[in-house]
Picture 1 (cartoon, helix red, strand yellow):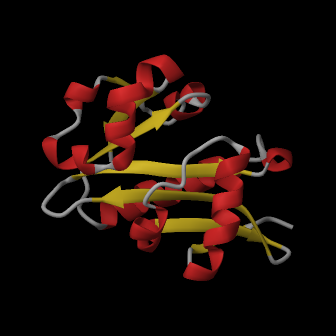
Picture 2 (cartoon, rainbow, N blue to C red; picture 1 turned 180 degrees about the vertical axis):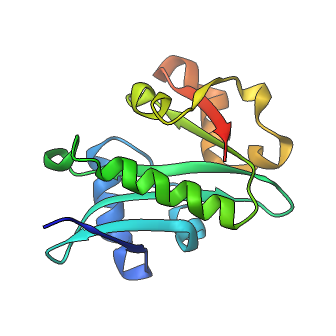
Picture 3 (tube, helix red, strand yellow; picture 1 turned 120 degrees about the horizontal axis):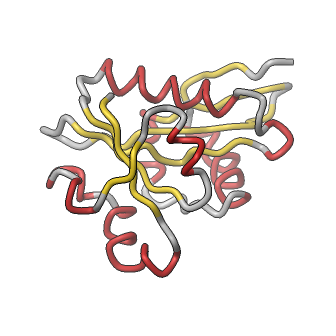
Length: 150
């Protein structure tokens, strides 16, 4: 069965956190951005997720919380989730997307994301807990920042 994409609800938070933990991603501020998170559901289970951090008075957003169950990687589900996030960003008037990754640089590059520096993040997008963490520890953890036009 092909997983169906749908907006996340508060009832999905525990399943999303479990998916993120499985791929070693932090759930920081997840509930603050839940209105901009999509889940992939198959047979009543959450098997993938992805989201967007949106900031007031800002035309940039941060792609976040991208995860797919291991057995579904390579199935195109991650691409479908990322496309949903991009379409959602455009519907909100977001013009530029940023993200952080440790293990999926090649995946994001296939969708036009390019390496970026923290200095390239607009001031309004520096509000994220992820941005602050990467600023402090990103180098030692091997975190890569990336960006593309929405």
